[in-house]
Length: 266
Image: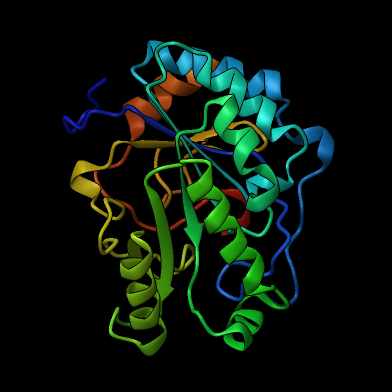
């Protein structure tokens, strides 16, 4: 469905949890974040119903995000529920890859089509520093499992400070070329400061063609990542939340003071 600025909004990014098994420095501040109550987080059935209503508004593409989506209990069943909605043509997931070696075959069987995997460096020590303790070998295992499960295309999300010519980014690009993976360079963003830019090798950050809505883990539909607007599917109903999100999607992002990356999915 077209919004006020003639953009075809067909893409829903679903944050299924605000929990994560890593603590990346650009996502979670050193002092930590306040987590949602488990009772506030949408059930699988609620998420599936929101997707079904979204289909009536033109949604046919879904990405499952977090936090880290693979720490969400029964996430495979959620993939199955969403992929069984016949109007949904594209079901994907963004993951840090740590648990992917365990879940990839089940996700594929349930209907997941492709994955984006976060990898900012090939250096184990640098990775451990960025993630505050993560084991990069688990990510490599996850990439192999995604390939074996044919979750194609496999895209690598690499966060950069200033340029894709940074040494870590160059190493990731060379790794992706060798392994026949698609790399996307994402400039480090600041929700509260309003800093974002276009994704190198991807579609994100292009406000004039943005086709996305976001669903938070506690049931709010947000028309824009860099905006405080949000509409509660529980308080005003799913249809009305979609209607207001479509009606009020801004022409361009500004700032978001209500969310952190761990609870909006990036």
